[in-house]
Amino acid sequence: MTVDETMARLEALGDAARRAFNARRGVGDNQFGVKTGDVRKLAKEIKTDPELARALWATGNVDAQMLAILLVKPNALSAEQLDGMVRSITSDWVADWLNNYIVRKHPARRTLRESWMADTDPWAARSGWSLTAVRVKNEPDGLDLGGLLDRLEHEMAEADARVQWTMNNTLVAIGVHHPAHRERATAIGDALGIYRDLPVSKGCTSPFAPVWIAEMVRRQG
Image (tube, rainbow, N blue to C red; front, side):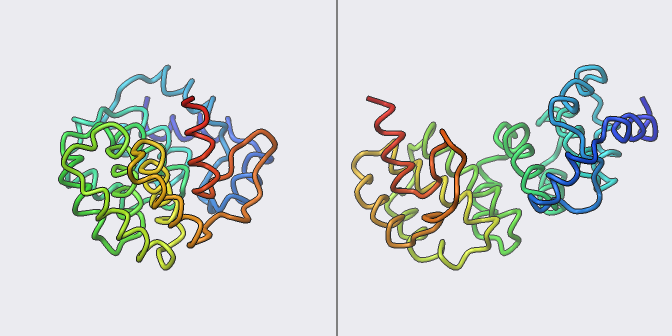
């Protein structure tokens, strides 16, 4: 399937109501408004196609970029290519898909994590903290958890909103998975107050760190 054919398929799958919903979530005009389930179905039809994925990503279209993420394997991208993709993101949704499907599985993720966490580019920093949250949970050996809490305590309040989200995920991961640091993580979240008043849908857990930590610990029994 060519890039033009794929873009036509995506445009046909677009929905005005979905575009409006996306716009309220901060997605710009370069989108068709395709439901994520339809993006996944199209990806299954096309299967792995790195060349097509690169062309789709270059369009800057949000739906095309989400499809591109599903058409490429992490080890098919160099660290430089992945870094370029991260820095060209324009949507939280694309960022989260890229982090979940590609960044977390990339062979250079450890080196990239360290460099991105110190980066002034908000999308790079968001990815760096996203990787850190995963490592806090799954591979904490070698991490300075106390040092991470120091950074969160002093940097999170002034961080770009895009970065705050994954910094908060890291704070919660420390509090949930490392009991020795739970009290301090909870106290930092309470003092910062980030997401304290964020409305949440019925049945969902607040992202406010003290509430989120307590609920996840409760579920662990």
